[in-house]
Figure 1: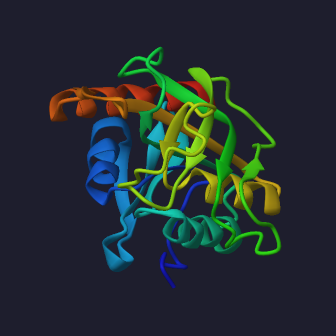
Figure 2: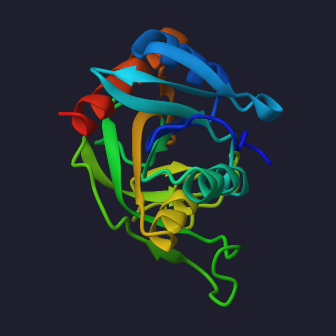
Length: 214
């Protein structure tokens, strides 16, 4: 429904929130990228990297959105591995802007996946890539959030990771969260410029691809 069921999608998918980022990365990094699905402007490109078939997909923002796309990729297209590649804010001053991190555990207060549980819930990926600095990640439903709860214990925050790891574990597939720190939530002066974000994102994609196909 949200991804063309006839689309030729690789067994390995890198997924980002922004369709423009997906298109830009595919054109920069893939050999012969082809737009295979564009339902609701959530673009999916399939091409090759160093001879290996790979797809770049789009998730939109938030857990409900990435849950739709990850489920359809796992179920309808038999994708075996999804890597979320995106940006994240950090709660910690010792994590520098531009640092690449991998979530070894994600916590969330959202109970949509496990409605019988209340309060904080934690999930760990069944598989890790070993890329970047391992972090404890907070998956929030609010982008603008003044709630200080848990900040002292958590490293970074995004809005999609818990859902992806939950679905990876549910379907027994590889699901990974690799992020680049783009801003410090304690210091508004510590934030990437648009050019820095673009370059850092490209380097992160390359890092992930090289690890996947080494």
